[in-house]
Length: 481
Image 1 (cartoon, rainbow, N blue to C red):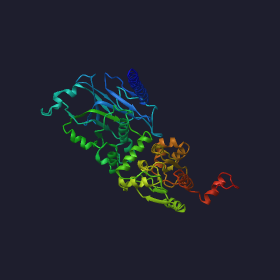
Image 2: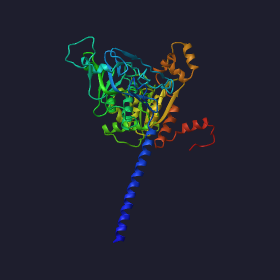
Image 3: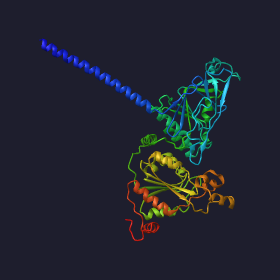
Image 4: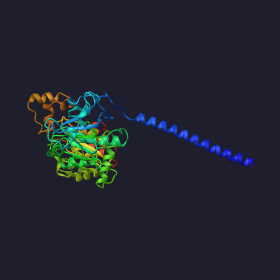
């Protein structure tokens, strides 16, 4: 009996000891993982806390997303209003916009750009102004009681349910899909940062104020916005905001945010893939391997039509490639555009004519971008890398008949500068920007072959191209294949 009791006691002691050791190991592992997770979170700032409860999250592409405990919007002056404890009730402190870009590269100046602070509590690259007000204003019963008689000296407060995000578009006329995307996709970045817990302190996107009139939007823009917002999120255009603040009220919310413009649209492949998958799911489009189908976009309403598009079609026919053509992308609705880009293994378009729809191409598809004379803008190259596309740029250094300079002196000057400087000087850039794209067919043919090989479909050059390559590489007595 004593032996049995001893064995039972030893077994009980062993189990208790094992449990204690297991709990200690689990707790140690939890602390280690917590420290590792915290070290992976990008740096957030909270400067001058006594003036403003400000938190700004900076992404890897320097895009900045700022959040506030309370955020208001002044519809009379189109300004952000931020309450603070450090001002008397009758005081206000204004801060101005400070957007700075290197438009040749679509990068901030300087790089890295300055961080948000109490003097300018907004992302560095946004055309938005604002001012501080005393937090006492929000608790003033005269301002919050709508039953009082109208007092012209008192701005009333209208509180809305949920958080408030504010977007001031990068350009006034946002029918241009690219510039619209630069303005609204930071909201997608904010959602991803919050949901991935990289910046869990960011508020939900419940209400989005877009400071732009409905006449400067189109169906593509608003469909994109629907895909960016969460299921219960709601957007308001300028007309809607005026209806909310008919008496000139300040519109306020507990929790809000402002995000800087995002020229790369996505910070990386994870953001891009999540957005593409969500759009595919909403339109019942499957994820597939790139198909040997070319989508050739002939032009858009920005006058960047390819000259002699029949020659490009003839090239595709010579190689017996299946292809589809679009005369003008803006004539198609959003759903058709997504469907066509998702089905094409290779897209050929002139600069600016395919819009950000390349984000809907299948992963590891290819984009061939045709540039006008002496022009190069890296925006689509950056987007292609984020989305996971093979990218080929076709440059043209031969002046075509649709390129018109104001004078011979301007033309000679523009010939002597680099393509990068060419893009930054109006008298050089404008003649190229609105000219037709004259395509170097040999370069296009080689890019087409490389694109098909990259997406996993064999395409060998014609005999005429082989002869040309042999001469160019001095392989007179050798065969390339």
